[in-house]
Length: 191
Image (cartoon, rainbow, N blue to C red; front, side, top):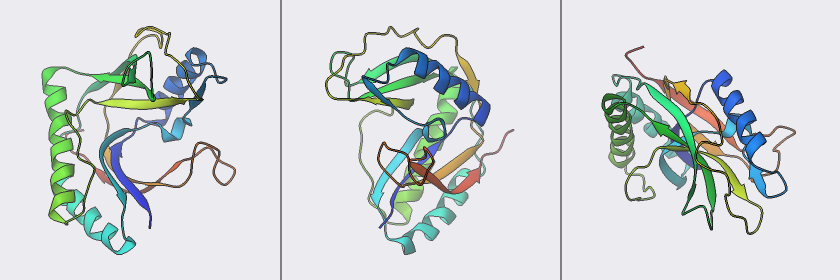
């Protein structure tokens, strides 16, 4: 069964710049950097889903999200979960005006609602903290780079809600660096 999640991804130019900045800051001996095309913002993680359930989900996502406005965001800052001393994930932050954050939260709520309407279980989480995962540690590591280490912010206006499928671990898959395949997408409005 495929492992699925729904998210947003920066455009190719933005993600290449972000990936290059992360590669300068995160030592590859200590960090497994995601491939540029794999950098994304997760809206809802579903886990393993029967292939027959994916098509109803795509329709529900289209019904729920196609009328929503694409938010104006900025990718900025560097951080870690759960913290910099014992990180499991290193991420780039996402910030916006109040209107931009509300538009992003509306997309997240619409995605979760679509998943629930088609009866798919999903990973419950606490507060939605928008971020783009950049790397995971190789063994024990601490994030000693400050929040401004990535440099200036990147304007980002996500235009698509994407259904992703996990296709591999951290090593290159099929001769590429992709860990996630884009199965389908829904265009957002307001562009």
